Image 1 (cartoon, rainbow, N blue to C red):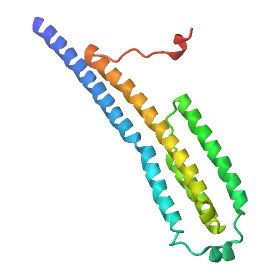
Image 2 (image 1 turned 90 degrees about the horizontal axis):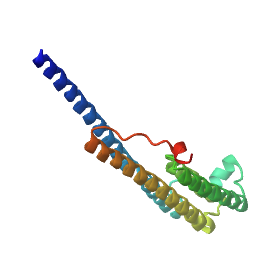
Image 3 (image 1 turned 180 degrees about the vertical axis):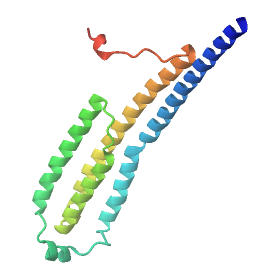
Image 4 (image 1 turned 120 degrees about the vertical axis):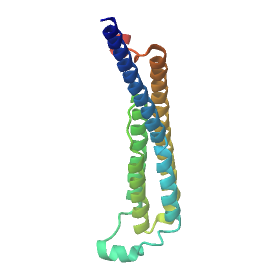
Length: 186
């Protein structure tokens, strides 16, 4: 009878250790994912710099703007493209700052590279890329640096929280109690 009781206690202890090991492994995997995700903004910025280099070289692999205009029609006027670029830049900055303040996990960096590629192409087909290259480059660099910083700070904050949970788990053998943000303000 006593041996059965010891076996039962031993099995319960093994189950608790196994559950603790799974929680620990899950936290370590989440920290690894966050570390990889924190580089997302830098990858998008690198892609934008590559795109900007291609634009600087006047998109040598694309057909000449005259050929495209002949088949598709006239491109928008450079002034209209510039107005949309200004609107896009301010909208992207405000959206990024609001996501930063809300602490949202939003992987939007690569879509900005696509939008900026569109601006480069519109200027190229309007035959105004040389005059407006630095405007697109400056707007893109600003937006993508802000996005990179937003993603990095989000990941750093989450890694800190997961590290605290991991330390609590290793000290106490269980996860810390969930904090309810609403109860902090009551």
